[in-house]
Image (cartoon, rainbow, N blue to C red; front, side, top):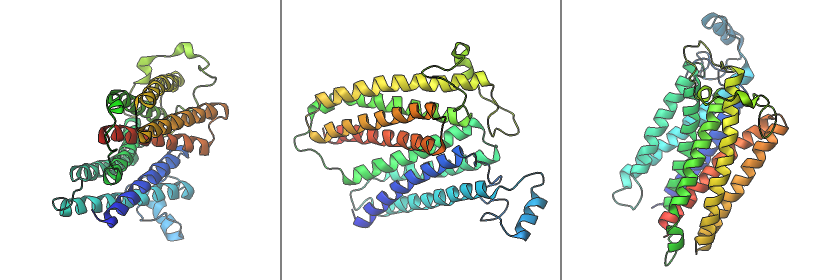
Length: 329
């Protein structure tokens, strides 16, 4: 396997993390509809700023107000996401071309290419369906999935087995997989919370004021047939229930992931896997700290962005641990 291919995979994985961050920043700063069309912006390849371009916007998009700041955030995210798609295409082409002659994964790059195509469609639907929450959550999960699979591809290209294996870690693979599944569920709940603009609809800690009105049925209520979903369309009680369920999920995640990492750390023999379990624990503790701080500090933008990125880091550390347990045992 060539050094150029390894460098390409690493660069693409790092870009995927950046794209997830840009997407979160765009969403958190309410710039998801900064450009009401796709893939351009008010019919242009860049944000319209000249007099004749603004005149064309007023003619072709009557009743819409051009916010150049929001439009710029949206277009920066789109261009970085487009670059990510091209790099994933390059990885897939390289794997198809040389996969039979050089020992490298072929199916994983193919899955990544299909996923990034679907992710582009979700990006289009996010705009054309005016931030429909189910589409927005799917788009968020798609970004996390692409970053995770690129990280897995990088690990497959660079990891080396531990001599002699680690039967202690092998016996605990189920614990790590359970922790990974729980984190994915919690990320999905966080995406549903963000898609419905429910972050600010839960005052108090650890429970919300008025938490007696919590309804599980309201959490999974799908808002449909609205002209625009920007800033949310659900009732206060529904959004409070969504937020409170996310907090319950955080507690369950703490218990499951914490117990799993303790078991893996105590049961594994190799220092590599012990350190991987410690990395998951550190990411989990940091994420919970950020979540609590967000509540007390009333959701500052940069801290909310850090909370999103730390969720991705927690996911990536778990992907690495699960891979090492399978690969090195």
